[in-house]
Image 1: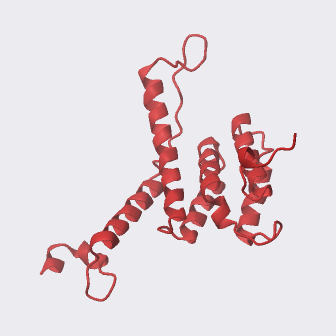
Image 2: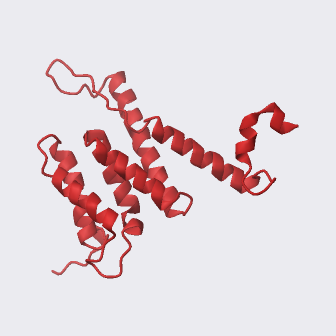
Image 3: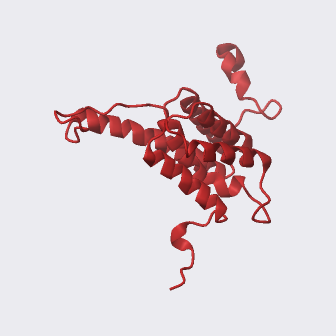
Amino acid sequence: MIERVDPKIISLKKFGNEFPKGGRLFKKYLIGRCENDFKNGSWKVNIEFPLNKKGEPDLMSYEYYAAAKIRRQGLGLISFIGELFKSKIIAKRDIYECIEKFLELPEEVEMESLCRLMNIVGKQLDHHIEPNNHDQKMESYFEQMEELSTSPNLSIRIKFLLMNVIDLRNNAWEPRESRKRNI
């Protein structure tokens, strides 16, 4: 009877005639919401900050704060997706899709999102036994990132973000702060 009321309910069935309950239902809705937000491009809001009379961003304007909030929310979504992967809620192929989407249109927002995602999930995606034995997909992603880090179309800030991720990988995903320093 419930299937006649709403045909979308049929898609909820995963295991035989059983509807997902509790944690499985929450997980399904959580992943669906993240996937929807990502595909709708809520992470990809490219915002022009309002300028003052001197031609600099007007840091005191309402529009500046609203734009900054939208940008933070987009990066928050990317961080959340990365943390879901680390918790083994999202599959590796989904993260690869995200990375490929970022790399297909290399603009400021995409590159910043790519760097944020790689900082979070890079170590898990690039798990390797020997320092120079990398996954082929990851190898091609990092080749593209190296090319982009010298691109004249990107800002210096984004180039440094890309170089930091590349350096992080070259140092076996160990952050600079935690490396031992010889005095």
